[in-house]
Image 1 (spheres, rainbow, N blue to C red):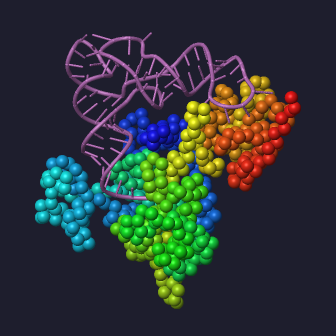
Image 2: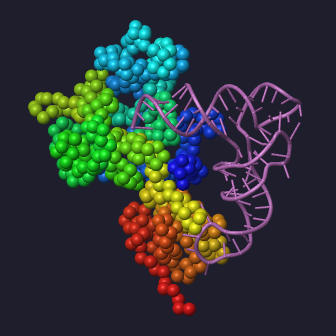
Image 3: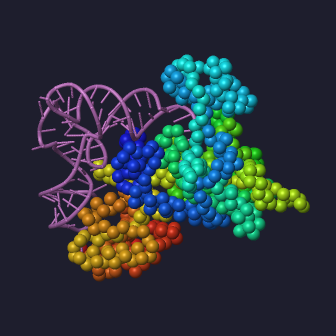
Length: 517
RNA sequence: GCACCGAUUGUAUAGUGGUUAGUAUCGAAGCCUGCCACGUUUCGGAGCCGGGUUCGAAUCCCGGUCGGUGCACCA
């Protein structure tokens, strides 16, 4: 199968099997970059989010939730009002849109010495022409990358948040009190953010409304360097591709242990390194394979306005190539410093190491695009196998992420006792919060294939012997093998499989030896 | 937003200036079926939107919309 075929096939299956629909609304003229999750997509994203929450909680993060709307001053303080504008200029001849700053930069203007308000004057003064067609350039206009809306009566303009992180920072005085002034403070937030992307593309990878999951550590400069949890992970190896390696044109890079990264001064703060590792664990936790993960350090010109150091966790997308899914930022004291400046609230400071000193806490941030992570977890899981010239489609998701990990089938509809027993088992599983599907339509083989295509890991089949011996077969998606287990252990076994407390391999097969003929 | 390419049942496709728009798959209801997309019966479902040419347009032309790819932006 060519990769082009594979791409369109995967996209087709995502929609066809009820994972992702869109762009939405499909029956009217859709808005680019907006999607619906269908029944299975929603189940799967719920599971993925639960998994992320679990990992955050294990690592002592607490979850908060903040509003999507906030007054403009918040975004002035955060720097977004200033930085989230693109200055664009349109060619009057060929209508190509150019960014004023990149245009001037390409002509070797010293960007440090130019104010954004001067872009238009310079272009006019120096008679700068369109680089594509030599045509005359029009006026420089602003393109706001933040989404605004109206609120209240009379309506006033508000900004929809372009990131969740800043809204979390506004809570610092409250959190500092909640955690009884113990630093560092670990919190995270999952929720929507909005950006006027110029051109949404590539399914869930670039949309105008998107979900983020951002973890924050409020920490003192001393704690960043003396961070006990780091010791537990110091020997782990991560695929770190440093800015220096990128700048020297090296496309090959080697995994390094985290201790080495610090020794070689690729990274300096143990707390920050620990956070990079957390990003890695989360991505592994939702089923992305290590060979498809790398960390890429931002080069100095790439860094966001708030970042001291920035690394992206990138995933090698099967459909779209290496793509950022998580940014890990050392934001320094930029954010709380700015909010202190704009709000004048002294509670944004904490006592420093010397007596009477007040300091602004440092912030380390880990920022995931949830939609992206969801999309990658899904796209990487499609497996196409050939079985006797018939293609077998398997959605090979981790059991914790799979929308519906279990299925219950009566081998046939006759006799009705098979159906009764199957439905009883199905109800038992549901009553025990084990996500299960029941199906009795068509042949048993058809049902196995139909359900493994949407990620069902284990199927329980009730056959005629089940009525006599109290056992059913469990079929494994991996290799289509089967074992026989007792019905009375079925709920317990399912729960253990779901929570990783046992594996299919460890299940004892009670299939009776074949009878002598 | 620009450039190029595309649009027929849910999916994949066939074909035609006048057709009951074909096929496979799919879905529904049966029959059959003792473990891997079996078979079988019946049924269901389609030419993106707007305008033009024409006696007649799903088919030709123009415009729009949406999608794909490339450029700029980005979690």
